[in-house]
Length: 132
Image 1 (tube, rainbow, N blue to C red):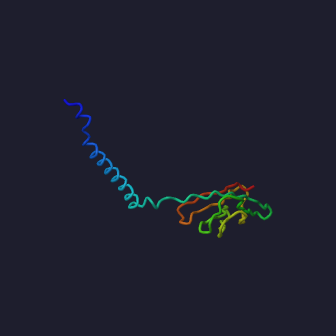
Image 2: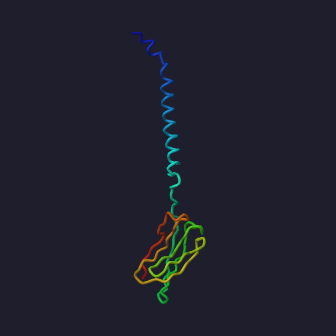
Image 3: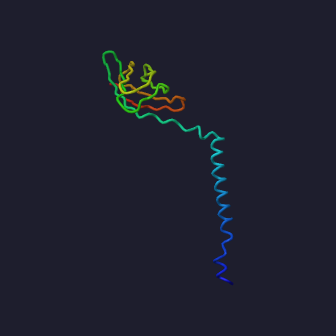
C-alpha cells in the first residue's frame, strides 16, 4: 500500500463539498418558499405599545378619567378604549402624552385601557385598576 498516494489523493473532496452545499441550499430554499406558500410570513403579530396611563376618579359623578402619562404614542389607526362595566369609550384619535378620556364607573369594578391592533387580530390591556 502506497501511503504517499493516499495522502496526496484529494479528488473526492470537491464533489462531496459541492453535494453538501447543494443540499443545504435546496433545504433553505424549500423552507423560505414553504413559509410564503403557507402564509406564515404574514402571521407575525403586531406588538402592543408600551404606554402608561393614570386613572383619576370623581367619586361624586362616578366618573373615571384615563390619561396617557408617557411611553409610546399610539396611532389613530389602532383602537384604544377606556372600558368599565358600565360603558366602553374609544379614544378615537392618536393617543399621546396628555390625551385623556372619561367614562362612568362602578365602585369595586375593574377599569381598563385596552389596545387593539389596526387589523383587529391582537389586543392587550395596557392599564388596569380596581375602582374605589
